[in-house]
Length: 41
Image (cartoon, rainbow, N blue to C red):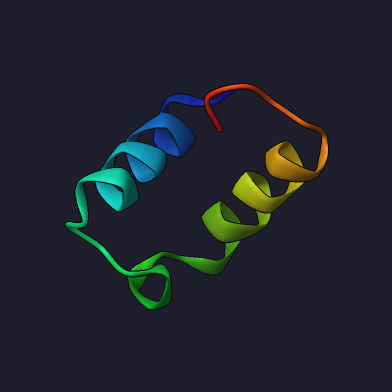
């Protein structure tokens, strides 16, 4: 998992950002990881 995706996941977990504030390419990467069943995604 790329560091930016880890940061994104942490921000969302902490409630600092909403999904709408996240750049599309990061959302796509996260969705891909979630669909792949990546732990801690």
